[in-house]
Image 1 (cartoon, rainbow, N blue to C red):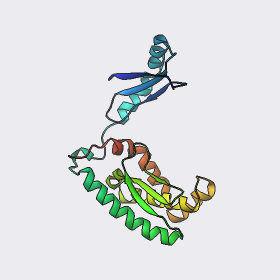
Image 2 (cartoon, rainbow, N blue to C red; image 1 turned 45 degrees about the horizontal axis):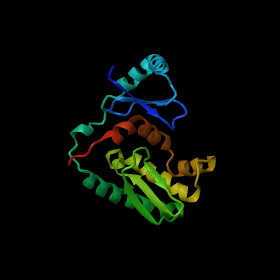
Image 3 (cartoon, one colour; image 1 turned 120 degrees about the vertical axis):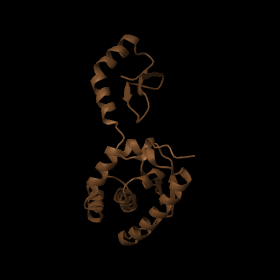
Length: 182
């Protein structure tokens, strides 16, 4: 089993264990937690950690890509702009602008001012996944929460949205770990 980075945090109220793609596992613990408690927790969580590592087998072939971040951002902007323009009209909403960012945990967001923000790595996902994220954020312009009515609106636009969300949950960590060519 590879190394585990233990971080003591003055702000942590409880422990948090994460296994980022391609990086050592990280255990963040409150400062007051003893070394014996940390060792006990790691012993208890060892099977879970090993399972997480087993699941982190590259499946998307991203290591073969030679795309730069700049190229990917341009591609993401072009695709998302075209999709958003078409879908916004169909949904009867309007947005102010599209922002392409390098978020570490989000695929997209929608501000109350009408800015749609998307992760540039979406351009590496299948087109239907990128399309789902765009429609999801546009639906937030009508319903700014994840209520049942929001999901009904998404469903009306993209009946297979669950497949796309599942794809992101399954492959998202690998996408987020992608390091572009320089």
